[in-house]
Each structure stands twice: as C-alpha cells, then as structure tokens.
Amino acid sequence: MTTTADITAKYQQYVMPTYHPPSLALVKGKGTRVWDSNHKVYLDFVGGIACQNVGHCHPKVVAAIQEQAAKLVHVSNLYYNEHQGALAEKLSNLSLGGKAFFCNSGAEANEALIKLARLWGSDLGKYEVVSMKNSFHGRTLATLAATGQTKYQDGFEPMPDGFFYAELNNMDSFKGVVSDRTAAILVEAIQGEGGVIPATPEFMQAVRALCDKKNILLFCDEVQCGMGRTGNWFGFQGTGVTPDAFSMAKSLGSGYPVGGIVTGPKLADVLQPGKHASTFGGSPLASAAALATIRVIEEEGLVERAADIGTEFQEALGDFVEAYEHVKEIRGRGLMIGMVFDQPAKPFAKILAENGLLAIPAGENVLRLLPPLNVKNSELDEALEIMDDALAEWHGVEKPSDEE
Ligand SMILES: *Cc1c(COP(=O)(O)O)cnc(C)c1O
Image (tube, rainbow, N blue to C red):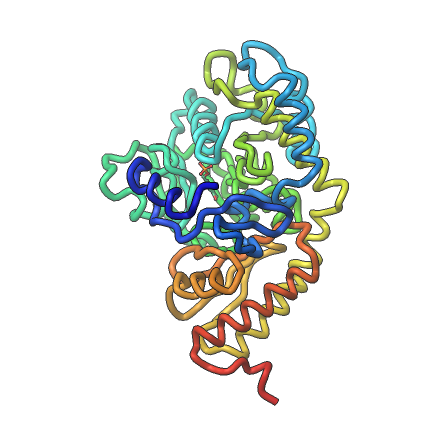
C-alpha cells in the first residue's frame, strides 16, 4: 500500500507546484464521506469543489460510468454517439429551451460563451464582454481576462482585449463600462470563489433590462452554482431572469470531467460547422456520467431537498453568529453556503479538517460549505457539532452550548 509519505514525495518531485501543498491525500469516498491515506474518515463539505452534488461514488453514477466505459469511451464529434443528444435535450428542457455544446471544464465552457458572444456580435461591431469584479470564470487567457480579480492575472499580461468589469449588485457600476461594443454581460448568480456572494434578484432583473435595452447578451456562469445546488436547477432560476446562454461544468458529471453551455432559441444556431469544437466534448462516457447524475438528482428530489435543508442548515449555522465573535454572517442559497469571518478563514478550515470536516475558504474571510445535496440530516448535525467544537477551539473558549 502506498503511504502518505510516498504520495507526498512524488508530488514534490514531479508535480508542478501550482497548488499550495495539501495536508491530506484522499483515497476513497462514499456519499458525504472521504477517507485519507491514513484511514482517517472525514465529512466532505468540499466535494471536489462543488462537483459531488449527488455524493461520492453514487451507485447509479458508478454503474453508468462502468457500463459505458466497457462499451464505448470516446469516438470524437465526427460521429454521433448514443448519449450526447439525450443529455442536450435534458439540459435544454431544464433551462432555456435552445441547444447545448459540450466541452470538458468550466473554463472551456466560459471560453465557448465568449466565442459565442464575439461571433454573434461580429456583424454588429460588438465584441466586448463585461463581467463582475470579484468574479471567477477560469484560467484560460480569455476566461482569466473575464475573471475580475487581478491577483489571478498578475504576471500573465497582456490580457486579451475587450474585457471590462462592473460590480455585482451595483447597477451604477455599469456606467462608462457598457458601450455600443458590448456583446455580453457575464454574471455568476452566486459568486463562488469570490466569497459565496448571491446576486440579488433586483440586480439580475436590472441587468436583464439593460441587456434588452442595449441589445447585449446576458450570460450566466453556472459552473459552481448550477445542478441543483442553490435549490433551483440553475442559480439564475432563483433570480427571475432568463439569460441568453449559460455555462456549466463542476457537478455536471459527478466529477467525471464534462462542461458545456446551453443557449436559448436565439443563439442556438450561431456556432456553425467549423466555428468551435472539442475533441473529447460530450463523449459517450462523459454524457453517460452527466445523464446518470441528472437522473439521480431528479429521482431523489435533490433540487427541492437543497432548498429545504439548505434553509434549515443556514438557520442552524446562524446560531454561531450569536455565539462566536469571529463569525459575522451566514449567506448563500440552498446548499451553497458561506460562513463569513472577521479574519482569514484558512486557519479555521485547518482546525475543522483535524476534527474531521473538510471545507474550503472562498475569498479571504469566507468558509465555503458545499455538502452533497443528498447529505443526511444526521451528517449535517454531525457537521454542526464539529464546527461548534472547532469554533470554540479557534476562539480559545468553552463551547457556549456546554455552559449552562
Ligand atoms: C471552477 C469555476 C470555473 C472554472 O472551472 P474549471 O473546470 O476549473 O475550468 C469557472 N467558473 C466558476 C464560477 C467556477 O466556480
């Protein structure tokens, strides 16, 4: 058996140090739990960063992947495959009623949106994309340019041209940013990496109105907040707007890499043969994984469940705001939850992990909680208990709940 030291040593010698060295190597997962290389078990509220909306190794997703892997893995998009059309149909029916394009990651999906905007706008003299400050859209050059956080761009200049930034929940910030050249406005219905910050319905509706008035496309990045996590299939559905297209990835294939975009009818046929492509996109295996994931979400009623238990869990977490000085606010929608502190969240995440709960920071002072949508009530209670202990430890106090 490979030891933790062996695993760590190989990373240090052979894997580029693009990530801060993790303290754990994970070797197994089931539902809400993962096991590390020392056989310690954790409640996983990271889920591969919002990729495990149906939990680790869901039997139905595993079966679909195993069956398809033994039958046909990949043939390219030079041929039709059995599942891609069915997946596109499903996603279209759940959202905008247009057509889908498939790729392999969130960045690629947003890249496809940006190319779609430019092609649509090419005869209109429109090519600019306005995204939000503090957003996150990926690490390719174009999506990095759309990402409104200079810390990710530093050292990679010059950024591609045509990217401008407004502020989430601030309509005034569009003044002087939107022009006749603006092709699209790109928004996360809930900013994920930026700190779990929901866009208000009023803001989303005002952006939609601005887009309609100026003939601008509205795009939503659903890579993190999609697939039921917020208590709607897609985050924008909770804000009362219909975008012209949106991107997906993360939880779409339960961790099997698959990304894509879905359009409304207006943009369904903009990308004609030769205009965009992906070798692996929507492969038989990727499409089977995504279809199985969607089926599980439907069969287990997980969209409704995310809404219901999300509200309950957020209320329970609200007690920590009363009880602990460093906890300032609980925010989010459904099971996309941020715990806001008065200081960096990273040291707290470390204490949580030692106590058996995995959760990651988002932004500087926010801890992100992303349990699977089929997390058990008992597991949420267990997580609350671990958090209570860890908060007391972090604050250097007795648990207020133990004092009577
Ligand atoms: C993770 C993320 C991306 C990038 O996805 P990758 O699969 O890492 O390329 C883009 N947008 C949002 C909102 C994300 O959370």
